[in-house]
Image (cartoon, rainbow, N blue to C red; front, side):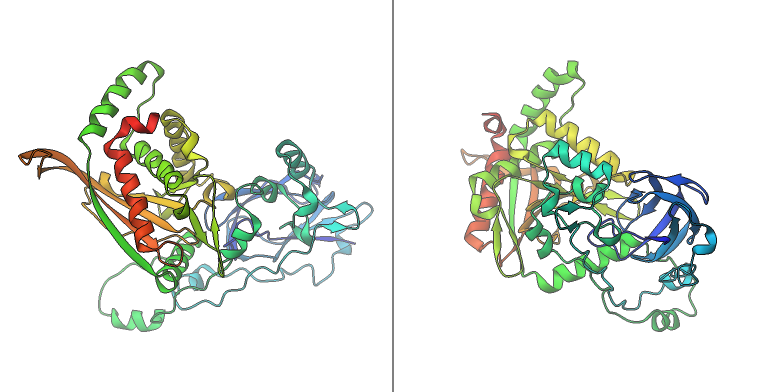
Length: 426
């Protein structure tokens, strides 16, 4: 009988997506693992692969369609000997109609409709997985029998295996998988308020909806407290200048942000109790230092994660950060590259911001807000006035995970690493 190809959930927060481009057409023969379409999620544009073999009998959703709900029928696959006449009337209509663009502009509260949990991708001793997913699992040493797939009928697909080692399943379960848009005044009410003013209505895309929902949740449910310090950057600027001279032949140029990433990663090792995340009814204390860094892109932001940042060299961190930032701006990051971590950095210093308070990205335990380094008059060690380059930082902390004294120890360790940069190479 015909096989329905459903809109997949390609990220934990995805409830709907845009079918950007079909890579096949009706009548094409496809095999398991073949690429079918490009789908834009709330974070990135990703390729969607076939999990069954057959002939594309009917394409149900045209490319470019926005607001296609997860698990809606997007195409029908015919098996050997079947014809288009075998497609039932029920299959000939998408299970969930795409949301018109006009409706997506309304900022009224949206009830979340999470994709149902996929059934186990196993039947006795058989594991249902695409060939590409099996090959990646073999290369990474991932046990497919322990996984639950996100593909149709619980099939394990490429995206599942790529993200398998990114974060423990329990941590993912602690993260919200679907969040409602924050409740506020309705679109009609706001429109009436500004009826006599000129304005342009901007529909919310998937990323903007996700940012609004997660940050509203964070401010409403995470008990933030804030710790602030000033950092003397003179030693760091001098040390960075010398290193960059020596690294110029290798075409490597370290940024202040590279040092901040390294300083935070090492501080999490120095204060291991602060290297933790909130998991609903418990705290997970992480061993590696996986540091997320906020990257602004058009219409939103990503927080790619630099894993094991404490053991990587400054030049390796610099190269990895440049690669992640470039692909983030092109929306080409895979989910496992921006999920996980226990700590985040948000740096607005390059925009001239002196200081600010960043919002924690759950389930992280803390985030460091970094301001601009500016010349200021300070009192030197001998009591004399001197001019130094000073940077303000604010550590936002989840009090459920980290208490005040522990947060202070973590921030002090970060400051010590940045004011004594040579020690970070020891």
